[in-house]
Length: 125
Image (cartoon, rainbow, N blue to C red; front, side, top):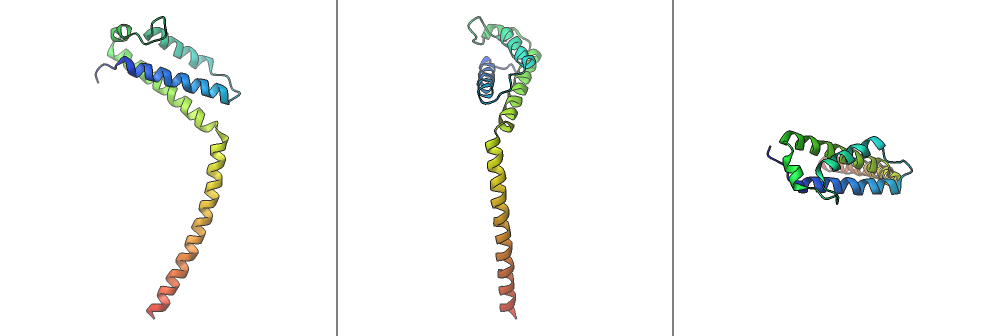
């Protein structure tokens, strides 16, 4: 795999930042300090003083180091997405309510199917 562009890192850092801000707003749990430290370490490695990804610093890293940074950022992003999915009780309640409606629909479909098959069998005789 070739070198990874600095835009990928910028995108991942922005996405992680948005997810972190949203999770802090919507939950009572503080952000895990260890993970925040890992993100800050990555930012100091690849960004300049203004917080933008420095293309020169990024290109000086080896391909292995670039892949390692991208993998870590993806893992952190995926973990934050999972936390966001599981921390939203409204979505879970909606799913459970829809599951009940779905079960009721299946029961009615089975009843309709049995009546339909009985009608066809009686017409064959």
